[in-house]
Length: 436
Image (cartoon, rainbow, N blue to C red):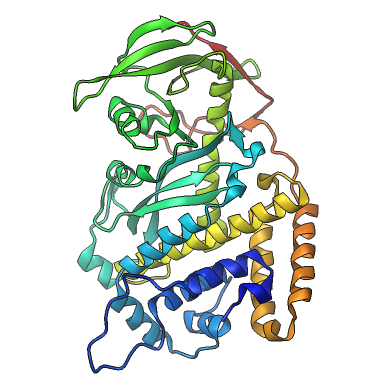
């Protein structure tokens, strides 16, 4: 068992929280039957440990994590008997409990608000008999998809790439329905940045009706109607947007701008925001701030490409696939916490500390702890933790280049131009506020 007092490593402490926190959703076992060898919270912590490892079976990871020997078939039966609710409870509890003060570093905020985003993605699953019997493949422009997919929606801290809340669809729910169940995790100190999928009157009403009203910056389609009320000094407008369900009018600030790079073509963009004071939050600042939304896409890439390292989940049934997704998000939160700890101690921006190198370091420490954890004292673990932080800071990457790729695809869909030669442009964006 991992003890926080003996590890002095934040990622091991996180596993200790998972390992020692019993859940209220533990299914009761039959009276007179033999109790399970692993409680549900122990199995959940072991699976999060397993998805963090680069290779090996679940039974090998369990032996490495707890020193318990069980066959993979027994572990599979145990996971299927638990269902998905204990994993949902553990994930939500763990993400909330680890939502510490690191995210509220003044360097990672705008006007005192933490930058967060909501978006959807999906995970591919194998064409196993269990999926064929229970799940229907999604339709694409070329017929049925090659693999079964499980949708999910996540709220991310954009400045640390830490998942704050996750909703997973078990019955092919749409992104909108999943997101509607997750926005209640937003707080009054959050600034939500979202794309055009969320830029409409329905989502304005949904965000405005939350008890702890978060601030928001939503990109909006050009053809949506709004009633102008007052022009502000920076060129933006106060407008009223109609709630399609109740007919009530919602007051927001509308910003219309155009962007281009290196003298290229201008791109029109339009935003609705709850920042109504143009003197405190100028339009140019908010337009530039929207670029942070792309950090969520990078967070999805980290969990799929680096952490999972494959295109298809290892699970063979829908419930165990959902369990695996929960474990992946918990493991990503642990790595994000380790990056944030190193950033705070070494005074290096979080996003300049490599996720891939942090992941590799944690994997090495997992092996070291499993082999010699009892032989290493608390003082030596503290020295190791400091050296790990310094090493991650020393390997920090340079600030990202200001560049963009063309909005083209190699296989055209509808009106998208075809990409024949892959080129990109460098340099800062030019921004001009348009007249409404």
